[in-house]
Image (cartoon, rainbow, N blue to C red; front, top):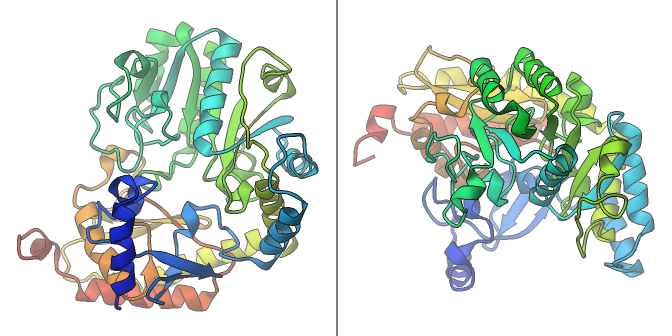
Length: 450
C-alpha cells in the first residue's frame, strides 16, 4: 500500500494537535510507525486519504455496532439536522431515547444523559459520594473509567506502567490528595478486595468496575468474584457502579447487567447509545437519581447534554439492532470467528515460539499471547504476558499493510459490527494466518535486527 497522502496529512496534524492526535492511542506509539489518516468509511470498511481500504475492527472504539454510514442512522441524522442541531432545552429526542433505555433495562428507573463516558463516570462518583456522605472510591487495576482525575489511578490501556501503590496517579497533573481518594485492588483477588473493606469500609462511597474489563485486554471475570463484589458492597453500605460504557447495549439490549444478573446501584453508559456521536449516561433507581440537581442537591450540568443529534443517532441504532435481529447476527458472527480461528490459526503458529488464544464475549474479541501450550484465562492486567506488545506490533503492521485495521494497541479489544459478513471474517483470518507465517519468530523479534 502507498501512503503518500496520509504522510502529508499526518505532518499537518503534528503541527495542529499535541502528538498529532486528539486521543493518545490514535498516535500508534505502541505499535510504531505513523497512523493512516482516514477520509471516509462505509459499512465494514475505512478508506484513507490514499484510497486504501481497511476492514475495520475498531469501529470508533465500539459505538458503531451497525458499522459505518448505516442508512437508518444517516436518515435520522439528516432529518434531525433540519430540525435543529442543539436546543439547550428539553427535547423530544432525548425523551424518546430515555424511554427506550428505561423500557429495556429493568434495573434503572431514571437516566441522565451527558456528553462522554468520562463525564458519566464523574457524575456517578459524585452522586455516590453525595448519597453516602463518604469520600473513598474503590476501583480495580487495569479498569479504565475515563480520564477524570480520581480515575487515572492504575488505569487501563496506555497507562500500564503505573506503580502498584493503591493511591498513585497514572498521569502528572493529578494532586496526590486526589489520588488518595481512590483505592485500587487487583481484579479477581477476593482477599485483597475484602481487606480493603476491612480497613476502609466505613469510608468507601462506592466500588466501580467494568463488569467485562475491556480496556487492558478482555479480562473476563468469574461470576463468583462479581457476586462477591456485590455482596461486600451491600454489607458495608457502599454503592456498586457498573461501568458499561463498552458493554452496555453491545452485549444484548440490556448489556452485561441484564445478561448476567449482576444488579448495580448505578450504571454508566456511552458509545453504542450515541450511534457514533458523543454521548454518555448515568442510570439508577428513582431514589438514587433524584439526588441529582434539580431534583436533589448533587450538581451536574452540561450545555450539550442530551444533544438531539446524538439522541436521534442512538435511538436509530438501537431500533435497528432490534428490528434486524442485530444481536443474533453479531452472536452468530462471533461464533463463526471463534470456530474458524481454531481451524486456521494454530497451524500458522507452529515454530513461532509463542501461541495466541482468541478471547471473546459476543462481538468483543482480544488476542491473548502466551508461551506455547501454556494458556490460562487472563483475568488480571498483571497476568498479561510481557511479550504480548512485541508480538502484536509485528502482526498489527502486517495486517494494516494488508488492509485490516485493528486497534493500535495490544491491550485494546476488537469489535464486530452488523455490517460484517462471514466473508469478511474469512478474509480477516486468512490475512491473519498469512501475517503470522510471514512474521519473525519470537526469538527473532527479540533481537535488534528484527
